[in-house]
Length: 158
Image (cartoon, rainbow, N blue to C red):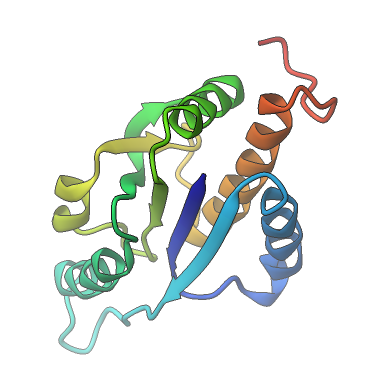
């Protein structure tokens, strides 16, 4: 099954190595594509709403054909690691094309992305910086792959 991670900006040097490692691990389980779209700068005449709109347009342009869009947002539905694995495995078994995860920039996702999303999901009850959200998502995609295959990485109680 194809999984896209569409993220505003690049993984910075502090988290970049760990993010790349988990994205490579997750790529063993899913047909994983990482797409980085250009971020906008707020200030100097660019309101947060304008920044979100510009970044949102870039995100929506990159969603692959037939992929179900899931927006990562602090107000989204919480999923356990096991639930994520189960849902991705079920989608793959049903022959669905895949899922595109959208990670907004520093000021979040636009209303257009949130409206287009089939699901809104949160990674934590904490608000996470977008670079850290990308790392957490990459690790969870890797974990979901190991759960789906019954491998020992996941030691959770679910």
